[in-house]
Each structure stands twice: as C-alpha cells, then as structure tokens.
Length: 243
Ligand code: ATP
Image (cartoon, rainbow, N blue to C red):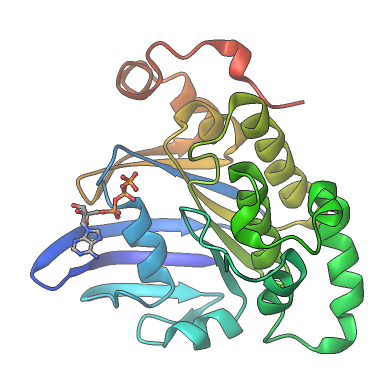
C-alpha cells in the first residue's frame, strides 16, 4: 500500500532522514521503533508532505505522492494521529470529531460517529467536554478517533502511548489491534514502547539516526538478541497486551 524508497528529508540544512526504504503492506500493522531523535516523527510528517522529501519517493497504492500537498495526501486516505495529542483544545470532543470528518461525505457522519464512540466509549461520556480538559489517555483516544473519522485507508499513529499509565496504554494498544483486525485498517505505528510495538506488528523496523538498521517480522525482532539488548532490556513480560 505504501512504498518508500531512498527517502531523504529534514529541516532546512538539517537532514533527519538519510535514505529510508520501507513498505507498509495492505492490512498490516507496521511498527517503527527507535530512540529519541532517530527520525520517527519526521518520517510520518514527510509521508504527509511536510516537511517535503528532498530525495527519494513515496508511493501510495501505486501513485507517486512525494510532491503532493498535505491536504491532497489526506484526501487520498492517509490520516495522521500526531504525537503530543494535538487535538483542538478549545473545541469539544464532538467538534474535534467533526473536524476529522471535514473532507468526508456528511451523509455517513452519524454512522461513523457512532462507530468511533463505540470503539472509545469514554469519548461518548465526554462528548461535550473541551478537548483540552480531557486526561492524557482520553486526548490520545480523541486523536485516534478524529483520524478515523476521515475514513482513512492508512492510519499513521505517532507515539500513541506517550505519557500514559500502563493500564491505559494496555487498553489503547488493545484498541489499535481491534482497529486493525476488525476494520482491516492498515497502520504505520511509531512507538518508543518497543515491546508493545513489536508484539503488535506484522513487520517492524528499527530506525537509528535517520536510517533503517534492522527490519523483519515483529515476532522475530522481539526475539533478536541485538534488539532485545538495545531496546527491550529490563522490560518485563507482564506488560503484554495481546489476547
Ligand atoms: P522522539 O522519539 O524524541 O519524538 P523522533 O524519532 O520522532 O524522536 P524526530 O522528531 O523525527 O525524531 O527528529 C529527528 C531529528 O530532526 C532530530 O535530530 C531533531 O532534532 C530534528 N528535528 C525535528 N524537528 C525539527 C525542526 N522543526 N527543526 C529542526 N530540526 C528538527
């Protein structure tokens, strides 16, 4: 579904990605893990057109989207739930969800709204509350729900577990798995929580200083001694979320 080849990107004179090759096959969860500053967020943002790629190509369902503008990329069915829970803080939960659906045919709004509120019942309880007053976990749910309201074909999730308590993280990863399995949603997941991200992933990639260093099935990386030593040291198995 998504094919990235030789991708370079950055901010002015600072190059953050130095030739990324990555595929996201339809229906899969693909996880991207790496340390702070490795380039994970930059990769998701470059897929969305800002910052623009300086070299290389991004193809989505066979179409070259490398030079498209952000709104054109969104209109093709790529939704980005950004890191830091960047919801609209002064808008209510409902208004945030309406913003997510802004490019969609209004005739299926009610059905889609019911759908995401069934997935995240907490948001139904908080429907009139301002986004900025939600808890961290609720804001993260809202960011994902807002992205789903655009009926995407590919969902880009940036650090959904950032700053969340272990129990909330567990519920959130359970929901990500449901979105993938029940809705057949293709997901590119960026995470620092390497254990959870590898458990969930069909395929995973480890990014180091703007380059993909290790790739493989999530389960294989989970058992790779080098990966375990670098990313999973000290993580205890009770953090598991898989059914
Ligand atoms: P984290 O896990 O800490 O969020 P990350 O892997 O998502 O890290 P990026 O945010 O993509 O990393 O950053 C990659 C590199 O690009 C870093 O060296 C960072 O300092 C730099 N960078 C990110 N945003 C900007 C910006 N707006 N201007 C200049 N440099 C930036």
